[in-house]
View 1 (tube, protein in one colour):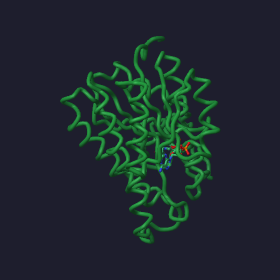
View 2 (cartoon, helix red, strand yellow):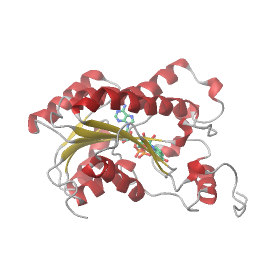
View 3 (cartoon, rainbow, N blue to C red):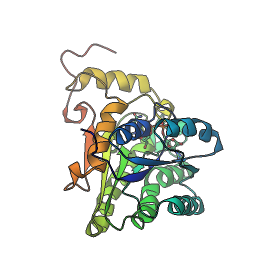
Length: 264
Ligand code: NAD
């Protein structure tokens, strides 16, 4: 299996700790030979991201708050100073005020709607624009989404609406960047306990529900997500773009509670 990412280098955005989906993807990219740079949000995360990057043979880390276009420009300038071209980007970023990730969607405030859309959906567009300028030989961009974009998941609220915009952005970006042989895809991961997920109301219930009702009768891991990350960022998926690919133990194909599902 080794060598799928040999000679490829790219940027991982959205690593917070060793529970992050970005970590699951970065680990497997490195195992397959990729060279990695990491951007982190804010000084506080630098202490966490530095040692993790080091574990994967990288000393190339820099700050980037994706809601700030100047900060994004600066981050890509930093990337360009060391690497004139890149082959891939992992966009594993989402944020909403957790007080609105519970209760009813109808109560969403304008400020939080706009902030959630900005950080969780528009940032992919802003990143794709800057990354594509560094991909003269083509490339691959992957983002992370969730089933709450397709169906109502209680508490997911405004984040579901932002993920729907993100998934549609994947299609429009794939079409815009396709002529440059830049592919854009999304991995729709099942629920996994991470820092971001801990902000979602009743997340433990969602985890149990998915475990009992998915065809594989289990939750997915960051290693499951990492395997699909390698597929999308390597040439294995050379003919695939604009796709939202479910890594959710099959949950999205099920229409009702399984007969063998215990009460939660
Ligand atoms: P995480 O908390 O480990 O990662 C979220 C990351 O987003 C953090 O690194 C955080 O610093 C970053 N971020 C937030 N606002 C930012 C900003 N303004 N600028 C730059 N970075 C910012 O949690 P995670 O679950 O690994 O989340 C990664 C992605 O996976 C998110 O898009 C999330 O919606 C998605 N996802 C998660 C799950 C799940 O159950 N955990 C399921 C499907 C999709």
